[in-house]
Length: 495
Image 1 (cartoon, rainbow, N blue to C red):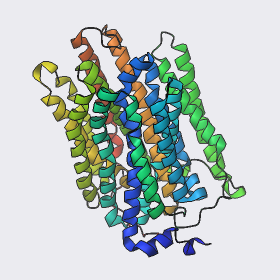
Image 2 (image 1 turned 180 degrees about the vertical axis):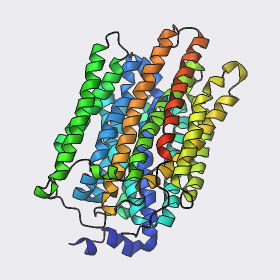
Image 3 (image 1 turned 90 degrees about the horizontal axis):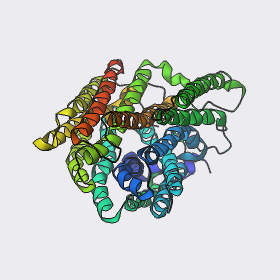
Image 4 (image 1 turned 120 degrees about the vertical axis):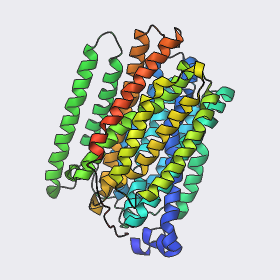
């Protein structure tokens, strides 16, 4: 059966649901992405409890987050190949089953190794899923609807981490860290049911999936995976007394990335002589807007994921707040973030994305820089104000970054561009989590404060404040690239 006559193909679903189908599809993907995002961020509130349960130091238990992000970062590069080979529906459903299985296995795990295996499985699924919505938005929606679609999608996705910590904090206090794993299960189940109705079996562009098509670039995948692992391990080793291992690992990571780029260039040149295509099509970087957007995405990933790790730890160790209180404190800012994204999404159809992204980066950097003004003795009003300011900044960035990076790009390159920008953002995020943990541990140690919080409270707060100032500087650097992103939106026809 050809794609045109398959009732579950893109053409068949459009014939059944009409113009509404693209919105039904977007909502379905939004639910799956909510499950992926929740699994990536909700675990942070349970890290202290898990550390005590397994009697692990911060450096080991932090791999619950970092291991997930390594798997998510690398698997993003496989999304274009998987979609072309197996189609949207099969890829999406396998990812939902992995998220569901990871939640159940992690929740019942009796040892830390099994917890890590569950987190890696969830990370692989989350990485493959996350580039798909941008592909749909840029291919299925006209340019004057892309901002609105991006805003609605972003609003739904951020509701998961906005509401999740509030519920998760209560669950950790009442039931312990295991309950956090089960939060992803209902979302994955509903996403599986909706996928049977609205997700097409076809590949991007409405063509039939080709299971006999190009083979996966396993060499490139191995180089990217090994380089990412060595990068994170090297960053972790910087905490030890002997820096030699850290320097060797970081040098190997840099060499591995260099080999990866050289291999991708070789495959791109030899493409016309064989079936194998590169894992990362470097042609996307020939578009200036995309290259600048990728730089923004990398530095933004460092700041976003580093702060997502740092903020709950700061509120528990530095301010002495309970997990349930942390969730309640973060809830209003999360809801405001969702509203901001919906509003800015519509603005992205009218104003230059570079302006919106730059404004968001400035607000986010300011929120980090103002954190040292927070002190428990004077109340927590300033803490809420600066968290809200940062979330408003995120609301300006999230719906505008992908549009500004990929508008005007040939539609054939959009799947690759979406996965690449996700990869560099998550690479920055994976490094950001490790860098924040390293800097925090370094400053705590210099202040004479133990990782369990024993020591002078003022010294502990000073260590956290210095880490926040580092994040502010990194975020401000992204402004240099943001101004050089796309100016006017390009017109895309739906396919």
